Length: 284
Image (cartoon, rainbow, N blue to C red):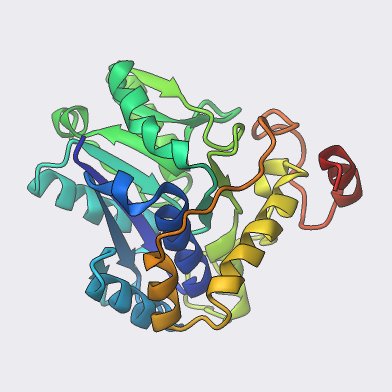
């Protein structure tokens, strides 16, 4: 299926670099022949734009550089418009604070097609297909004129829209089987760190620490991935990121079969909590 992966980015140069790196080095370029990656940048002021420009020049991604902060939902809608205009069959949204962990994630599109589903994601306890990794059939999307809604939870609103139109929604274990890792709060943390007081999410009282969907193994797995990434990208420069993404040797992580906790259950944990118990479980 002709697939457009769309990622919204705002001042997360390290995170977006790690995500693109993980797509190319874990899935591999050969399996991405029918897939294009579009990054919509919301007026980043960090090193994001030079890195994204270099990745585009190398033919690894496409970019849209917004001249204003359009926020997450609107940036994804820009990707949807591209998908509609250019005849993509599948729209695949990913958060910038995610990384791919298993090459088998690419088969999610085939699974969705086989099940004749029109929306697919990891269904959380609020019955929403979470925005961190969400697939939408473009035929259904066009028929119901689906779009993401700014404010609140874009994934909840899009899931409710599909459900209201009685479209087929299915669950896929993106996080619970470690096909990918969602760090959580990546952009919100940056907004606080850079003091972006004009940003409407600046005064959000929510905890900005990574929470990994309350999975105590996830911080350890993330650390292992970061060590691999920094070996190839010791300094976050455009050339270093491009070179790392273009390397032929694929990465295969040693991962548990399943997350130890039900997805989205329990209290969100800040980085570091329950690490000792998790290490014992992994026999590290």
